Length: 599
Image 1: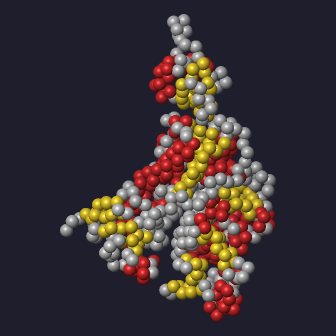
Image 2: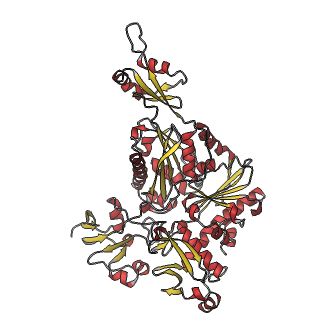
């Protein structure tokens, strides 16, 4: 019997070893299949369809699909092994989910690290024996840089080809390029928010300080899992996974860099500096650093402040000498993206007490103001990304993003792209649960009330309660429902976050009344209803006007670092201003967590 199997994924032929899962077979060949658990059989998102002769369904397939879908050939890729040749259909992966590309920021005085000076130099002769480098440095009367070796390799030919009329490019105190002619009007930087789920790139004109183009896309590491722990685990289980994850992160950054440059007719060689804000795991993976110590106690990073990083170390197409400014992290789970977010939001400059919450699979929380800052991280899980939710999906076309009660007592749904509802994203999940709590169909413990009680309490909604298998569900739309288990997932996530900010308040000797503003950071925070967040206890019970969607503040901080060396220094200074509060070693954490589960 042959030890190899021929497969066709969306008409693309591949040959793989017999017995591997179709999820791995696709991943090895660069074919993306949706997954938030990394192929471990828990998310049930890795949908594939056999066009002919489907294999017998597994017990997990039977729980994940309807009887008709099983008949039509739908299976879970992570639980289906390659034993015979097969023709498989893979649904397209959403590569550009709805994401916040801008956020709350501050005006900065334009003072980039990149300087350009146009020089018209005297040509050498027998009476003027100054070297080419001495000639250029002498022309930089307001700067005193040293030169990179690579500049000398082409300096002579560049000067003579341009008749000694050139532009010197200086990064901080280093001469990184000498270009023919006057190019002082062309200088760009790339700011990245490297998120676990979504990556955002902004191209900045460093001569004016204005954004030129912005693009976002799904992190290509997604098939390895929705959260950082799953991706760290992948590197621990497979020695080759680290290289794969590094390459996928760098491919994501490179594609975005190419997109924003192409859209703006900017050459990669005109990008002289890159800034990157990301959590500690994403930064480790993008640079190919072993993330295992981040995933096991005592959770230690390779370095808080990295040695000099070049754009090429991140796989970003840019000028050969372009540096990468990587934001430092406070700890393994309060990363450089939070450093950048605090910089952009001015938390350390405001006399008011503010609460900063970046909601995601790992939720980072910072409390304080001008005089002090406390930070912590809470394991919220992937529910807010639509993972671990029966009808969950990312914030893409077809996702229900808002749920409200209409005037007649029925539901009003808002769907991304005005499309037919196909699933439920994180903000829609929070709204749906909030509506059901307000209507009385979910009790304080998070359990659906009895059908008879539902008909009495909310007659217009009671008919939406149903049973699928042995589980009670609430039908939002045909084929899209909220299951009892989904409610539990949201309860676990919100309890972890609420426990985090409550502990910070206690550490500071404050109450929720002392919080003058709550900043909801990140893409999810941008689309979350403040009323819903307050109602279910996700954030403190403060007036709605105090809850502000801060948007992509990590990206804003990265932009500020490119535009101002002073702001860059201020970002580094935050390392000394923030005190980290560890939750995992607190003996009372579990009891506090349980106390916050109810609505």
